[in-house]
Length: 388
Figure 1 (cartoon, rainbow, N blue to C red):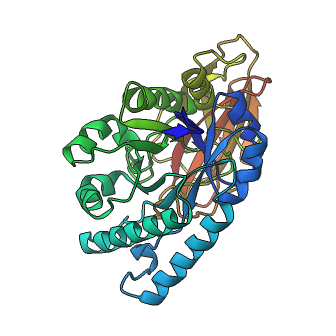
Figure 2: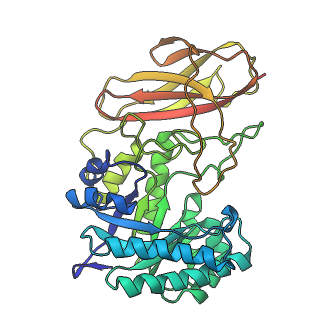
Figure 3: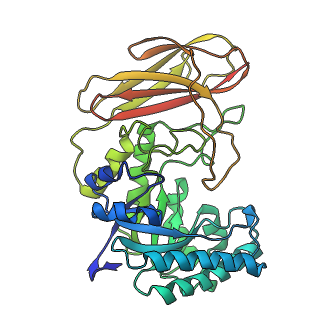
């Protein structure tokens, strides 16, 4: 991909929400953000580019591609956005939709791809200078990529979202016959649908330290040394997104502390070690178990975390207990309500240990620990708990 006549390899991040952490993206070696058109001005101020999404109809949300009125409204929204922002100096490319076919039948997918081809032509009729892509997810790629390849010849490239399946991505693209360029438009930790579950059905989240290792392996597996790949957007830069938990996909804690995933991306993007690295969590136990079985409601349980810091900084530990809503059935990043810490749950803390009182009400809860180095770095881990 060329920008102003020079090769441009994307080192980007998905940014949801405000611009608070864009300076950190620039500082860490990033050059682009996948975000809304309204953020282009903020990106321009920092010398960053913008991957801007355009709307698409989703069958699982009631969109009917046989309805001319629904399609006309969608096309008008695209026309307005492209016309308004096509000359913005921070604009990098347009993406028509994100994972439009979760839960779709093949017929519905083919209908959406036929419309995406029409939308791509519409965008290019207004703006002939910026690439146009669409974005598909793991399941869609395996099932529908041949249909997209057939029905969307006007696309300049493809956006692929891939989490733990990223390690099979190059082979799957080849097997499904996509020969054009592509961007990795989302990658990150193992997804909540890709991990083991507790006996009561809650997904088991990796620690921030385990996630950082996954980011490295994913990036090096697909983005590095891959001529078909134009770059990538790591998920998720902004730190206040709740999806199954408030820590699963966020690379920063809600107070802006950097986790190991941010450090890892800085190393991958720049080749240098950050001046201060985040702590690492080695183990988390509840009642001397890594994944405790049923616990008694109302009981006080002993929790311990083992952590270390690569810079030798003194570590501080914080704990909280929250209702566990990680079995929420929403998909595709659909909005989910967050949870707040349960007041009075933390009875006592000493060093790397804490005594936590479980609620008297039986149910599913999740224990969180946050380890901070006092210099902006942090690590986090959690354990699902079932009180009976």
